[in-house]
Image 1: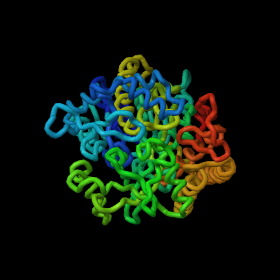
Image 2 (image 1 turned 180 degrees about the vertical axis):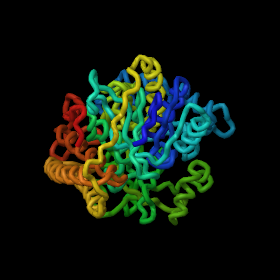
Image 3 (image 1 turned 30 degrees about the horizontal axis):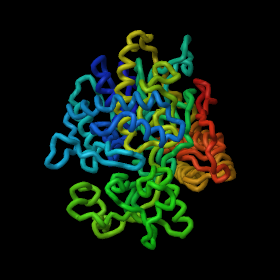
Image 4 (image 1 turned 180 degrees about the horizontal axis):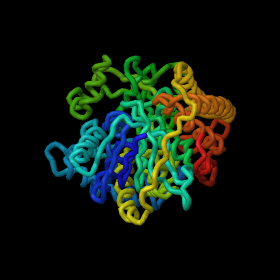
Length: 535
């Protein structure tokens, strides 16, 4: 088994991971690992923008109030203020590396700020309608120019390596990870003084998602298997408006479209959001997704429509150039046609318990971005706060690491990967079947509206599947599909068990049996995997 050694290992190449890598490169050698091509991550698909207080008429207090209101009592006020306060500094750094945010026509000194659901002011900086892609291009370019940063693509993390697991004496800490090199079909180990978990989201746990195929919850699953506490996994945000079209795979219609006046209407053309929330189509995502789900089920329709035909073609082409052209490819003209949309799994507000600076319960391991639960989002994420959190926490994690990494114990050998009696599988159909079953169970029983009976059924099925996957994992040589299946099944159980703990409806978690919100807001924690015990 080949073993590489670096000062810092960053697992994930999204905005959080690359922000951390760039800062860490000032201290030592950094390896960034990517499951696919470097740019294939949730950050690249973010259309809307970055929420940040820039307008003099806006305020940190207002942004914090909107964030706390959306978080439904589970956002931590100190964490919210800390992250929002750092926003302008991270925006300035992006601009220094060449990322250009839109300016107002005729007033180039002012940003063209968008407004999205849940925001009381226009405060969303954007680069056209491909903000995430523009940010990632800037970060990737700068990182690839850095001689202290190496990239390894098509490397799928298998598990974190901890000293307890390998039998090293002393306090437990993370010293790296095992990987499957998909291009060579070989096991690889990476040793690092500090490891940054920046693996992104969990959207592929559901069959309908806005996330790319890489979003299989690897970081959350690995952290749980390594013994870390996982918080608030029941809060899965379903984006209200994904394009409903047989040829459109995971195609998101940005919330910014509603910010520019689009209305949600049913199949008969009736606007319905005012019936559910006084904010209408600018209601938060949890309210909007449930409203769409209710209308679809009540009327028996497979989708609803997003209607922005009151805006001119000129305006739409300028404000949403890429979105406009993409819709045209599917035979939809935004200026004349209503856009068919459905909710889809979009973002996980829960994750590995971590501080704003990425610190976790496991020394040597830091978590930032969507994989982490910092206390910012609470029970529901405010639109465009995700890229902000990734930038701020990625940078903060790197700053914290630079303070401590030289004091940590030196290199410890990582033992060779144990193949045991595993053989090549000739039953790939089993993996494919289990993939489909996990995701179908989650959509049918652990979706936008839940009940105790549905959650019980889901848990029984997922636990049986996890046992089957465990036996398969032990009997056969690992493949990418098997590793990702193991991870989505682990994440599915975390979501179900977290949801079962919450006997109320709050934020993104709606229980038909408990429609009211409890007076006391309490986090859910799943923490029953002692370090070193892997399943």
